[in-house]
Image (cartoon, rainbow, N blue to C red; front, side):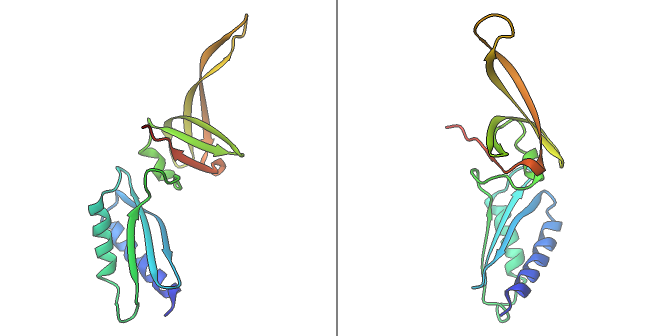
Length: 157
């Protein structure tokens, strides 16, 4: 069987299923040579197990088992997975992110996000401009998506 043909068909079915659920979006689709299919989804307000089941059923019930001998796994990106798409950042505004760019990591609160860039803010201790000692200053940086090597939500325990 042709895994490219299977991937094309699954992609079409996902597009159809997600068209009816505009709050959900595809993060990744993998079709392996053994015809195991892995779909990773996310949602603007998060994603539930029921959301994954609904999309899984929509794809599975439209694939012909006589044509493809497949297995299907539909899941969410997970709390510790890196953010991969600009759309994912919006739901994390107000949360702390660890962002790596140019090999350096900065941690801060995500204060804004759009399709072009994100804005992080944090407090830092710096030497006083006059006199001895340090004081706390508020830092803010806007980072274009194109410069982000990796970004993850920092979970608090």
